[in-house]
Image 1: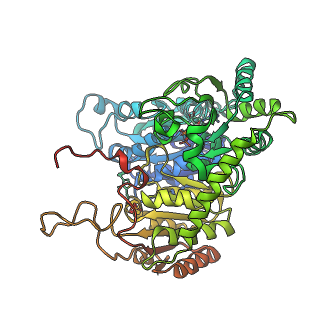
Image 2: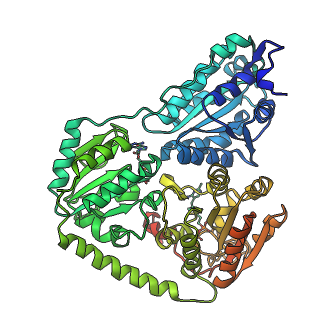
Image 3: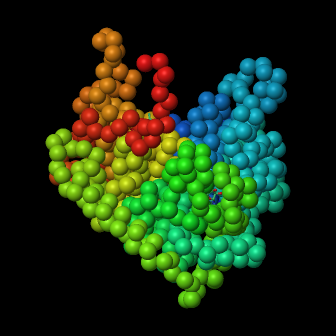
Length: 575
Ligand code: ADP
Ligand code: TPW
């Protein structure tokens, strides 16, 4: 029976209105974990033809929703139970907001009268108040006739302007409230133009064009906002027609193929301090870009500004000047801003001086040559480089595959070694460098794109969401998880200085067999101690599209504390 169109009853209720409102807005997938008061909502949503993907922990469902939002520009929906389920989902909501991914966390909640008097209800918590500071907007719906407005407001808040996380509180009592079917239907809203284009002002475009024209050593930095915006061909045209070298941030890799001759990624430490005009496209000058100042940018000391001028393309009018002066803010959606620039960058655009381009090419070729030598080595046990040499080849022959990546060394080395060839194919720890996104991102990426997913996971990173291998097997998803197993957080070599039996804080069980874990759920587990074994296993996983977990044994002394951000660890004054 189609529960959404039961005309005989001529009444509808809160459950059905929530489902109808989501479907009306083209939302056909929910990431969830059932329980009171939302179990029936998950059942009815499935009965109404939605895909209801259920996880083993809400944080992973939330991460799945967030990355579905990034990949599709539609808000990903995470549905949880009250208090503890809500709190488990909240980390993902906050992370989505930090990363500018659109998602909606919908949580059931307990009885308002009891919560507000703090009388101790089942899973009592003032969820709306707790969510508010951690997301872009938070709403509660108390009456069934307001469900349409509630969902419409949540969708607009998530995807318009700078995208982000939205919380929607649905008290248990709402679901059973009834309305006559016609009134219910008329109360729903199909959101018109949820993420309206925002056209940049002509004078702002002119200011940016004039500054760019004056540049002797221009550089474009592409951030994940540029990947999100899906303005791929205009961004590529802007770069190719202007001839300006570019640097992709981690999740912007592949917007143009990493092998593109204008990519300055392999000369990053040369171009950042040397550039005179930098165009930021959907990238914030946060810690990942050293706040736009200090030695990285040619400043004399850690807080000193370099000499560059910045053009910043961003949808948020508050983003410019957050760290250093932005000389030409270009506020609008990336598609509109880039096409406005493109109109100016026509055939008589002056190409950047050849001294600049050849100086970059020289550094780049030297570094690529050095990397080639390192990758060609074949040490026993494997190190990050020899294992990633395999992953690099696999992605090259499977450029449509989506690469999910988390860890410290496992993250940094993968980012720099594995070339990406297409937009939105690399999904990682993002702005926070958060561990635990791995399996949630894998599930959503496989479901919303239908493509093969490859996850490169540090052994510690994997542990945060590892139980979702059951989910991957349950939905039979084409996910190949490669665990870089070096026996610990960062390295596996630390010892307890007291000599007592407790392991060191960063040490795990040595020689753990993560491959056995997936076998418990009917997936394929492989133990790979050599690059050849790793290659065979990955090729077979892609050929079969079966859920696969490869335990890749990595030298436990390889890598560094925190990967490339060792210097962010505070050091004790008292030794
Ligand atoms: P990265 O980590 O890759 O450097 P950030 O997450 O720091 O990227 O920056 C992304 C930026 O992109 C944010 O400032 C956000 O406001 C902006 N942004 C996201 N979507 C759009 C869009 N469609 N148009 C313009 N700017 C956008
Ligand atoms: C939610 C701190 C950063 S990286 C990392 C931790 C615990 C794991 C590094 O070990 P791994 O990788 O994955 O084995 P590798 O290649 O270096 O051996 N909790 C959260 N987020 C973060 N970032 C941490 C802790 C951390």
